[in-house]
Length: 102
Image: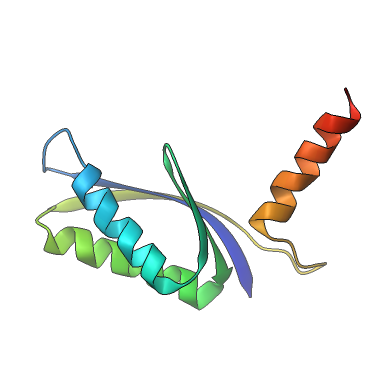
């Protein structure tokens, strides 16, 4: 099953700045070969369900290995069975409607 997720990993117990840990998680995502797009409060990732969830698990493992005693993660996810749809398709659909209303 194809899934698109919005992943927000927040290490706890390591101080105020978490950019080093988030960068490590981004390297895990990039190494996976899955389509992804980082944004200010997380990363969109798309691909086969098991592959995407394996990346989420690996992000947790890596951040814990870096010394974070706790991690809180928020995941929004969506699946479709009626047709294929990518992250780019979803954005383009809205952008087209914005262009049409001008």
